[in-house]
Length: 220
Image 1 (tube, rainbow, N blue to C red):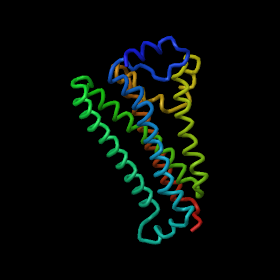
Image 2: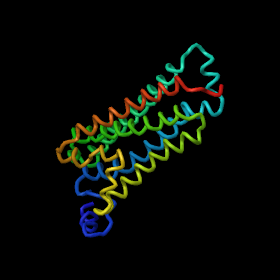
Image 3: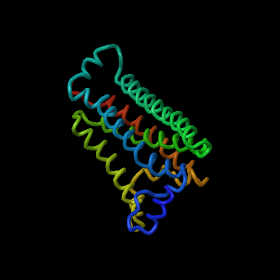
Image 4: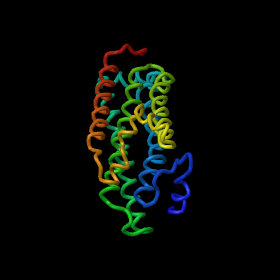
């Protein structure tokens, strides 16, 4: 890892970031790429299927014919989505730290790894809230995916490009992924305010999604 890091210092494009330590490698490569991609894919699929896909296929009429309200249905969908993401990142933390202790004992700082995992969870909740809002807004699954998944891919792509070259750093201003500052977390910098903004964004979009779905006309 050290040799690869040294070889990429003077490269015109460096997609790896800092990988000189185990925690830096996990922050930049795992939480910055792999965990983010898989959690995004999950959020896109589950966020679209719970609301818009049910309306598009006509299944929503069956759900709402039972003694539950639209608010109850959407709120339950949010609780389910949040719970599954919490379980997902809980497993990432437990298994990740356990394996690191077996393979490279005492190399992974527990507190920083926990905050990285928590921050990634909060980021993905914010991303899921965007997809959920799009799912509540549109009756067609294709339209919901166009907005929710489209914004998600845009955020991920701009975040990757902004880290490849200094001339592209301006792209950090157009993606919410920037609010999850892994460098600040591992270096002991300021990151709390950014995570609070992500939590606020998620809460607002979840609430708006519930209200939009409650008041809109459904083709039932």
